[in-house]
Length: 128
Image (tube, rainbow, N blue to C red; front, top):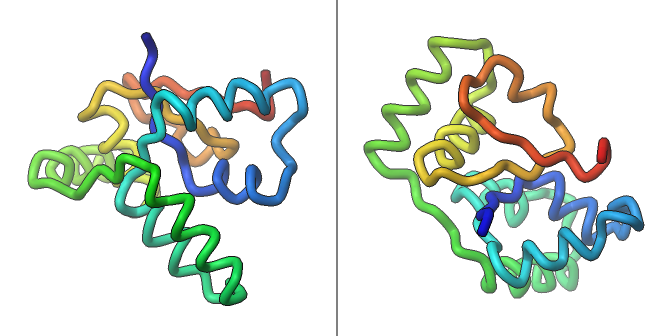
């Protein structure tokens, strides 16, 4: 069975109910069976400055069901390698390295942000 890591933008689109209708059931299945996120996604989602108090609590509760993958020395080393290989932004490099290190498929709409990352498999529900 395939395992996934969800990028922050997918969580935001899901909350906003803007995932393409034909992909919602697949995204919800991923939430039920393979809800993995990077520590970066937790920080980005919960650290968003425009949260209402209610929105923050909703996001925090939702994240509590995720397997949050911490930043380890191995992931940090892989992040460094990926930054050397391409001009990827640091948060995206951490997400890519976390995905690769754990042999996962990255779920993101921003597949362009991850161009040039060798071996990274991406599922973009907006392009299916």
